[in-house]
Image 1: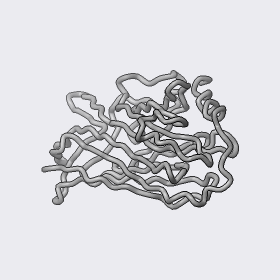
Image 2: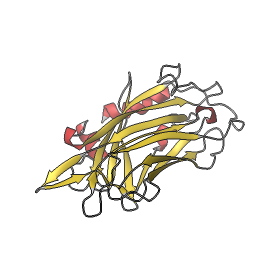
Image 3: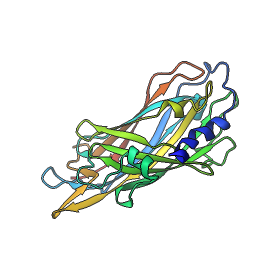
Image 4: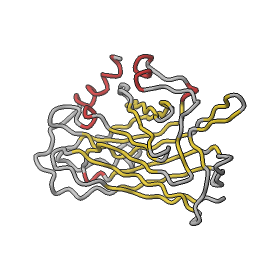
Length: 253
């Protein structure tokens, strides 16, 4: 538990005075990619196990602090942790890790601390630019309608894990960013630039296979539309309205 709590202190120790006014920053722009494999969909009677990979990027120039990440999956694609080995955020904290059987996949996240200085190009330099904070991100099944997100700062400590909530019949994933990560020290704010990862986990129980990601149909357009929306918190400037990105993923029946 102590190690996990150190994570926020690491950010706070490196925090720099927040800019007095950031109102002239451009509005946030959200970009990203997504893939669902295999592209051939299953059916309602025979759902097909699948792998979901994604990357969402928030524009650095906006210097915005993210409050919530919402990913909407199309009809015919769903997330469901039922019958799978799971590990909640509380269990991660208590044990210091999650069992490998609950692991969904990994990714990389970038962030920086907001200041009056130009933002670092963390995404373009793979975190090599000065001022970038790089997190190795691991996703676990968190329960039937949840996943657990573990953050490990490269060269630093682990952070208390986040929880993603699965709603709307498995088609919406919502991850709230805790206030202590939005503002690691009074008057200082973080700007999350990228979150990426992969979800893939199956388990056979009494002869039946269960999958965290499954497909049951492909629309007549032969495209699955994945939409990610970022909601923002106020920092040294008022919070802008939500910004979204939609990605079309080819599919077939």
